[in-house]
Length: 253
Image (cartoon, rainbow, N blue to C red; front, side, top):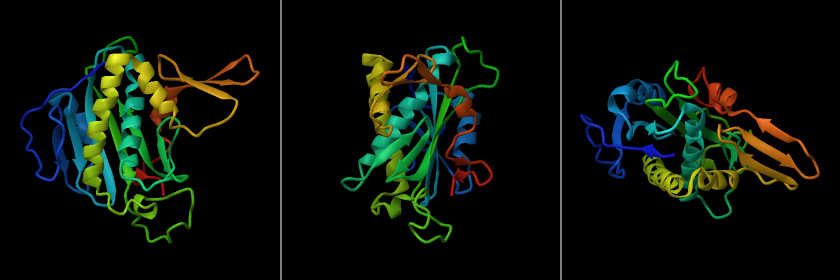
């Protein structure tokens, strides 16, 4: 896009969290809300602020961004965040582990939901205005704490049920930060098309189907032998993330 990042001030670096230089970590207690806290900090702390919650069963974090383009196109930052999140998971996955995205914001491991990403921007920001900030937030279920038998619901899973036994939530946050920088660099050097290509490769494959991402973030679907283009609007989906349980404030269980 380009998305700028800068080092914030007044935040202490956590010894167990190692981030690339543009990022400034902010740690919350276990019951904290990283997404809400990042939204509150964004106007003051600015880009590069990465808020994370100290939990072993759930990787929960949110990153403040500063876009350089109007809101209608800046929302495509969601896709860069999702690519970075999948790549962070893939780095520690067992061979043959299937990690896919359920458009636009949910992440599945071997067909089971583990979490996803979401995006926020200032209330009242106009579509043609460059917003002062965006926040990309994510949650990934590292282990199930509900007492259910592993595999009892194949549509819901956790990393420890899928072979990620050595993956700590703090390492996932660190890996996300590194992979997000890679995605941003690709966006800056080769336009958003590079991010779109990486994102679309992570959707479940379907024969006879071509998918593209429009300038405003909508998903465009073209089916073989059909002349019409199906448009799937991004904005309504951002209002209610498909993977998020708003009552429990965690990925759906």
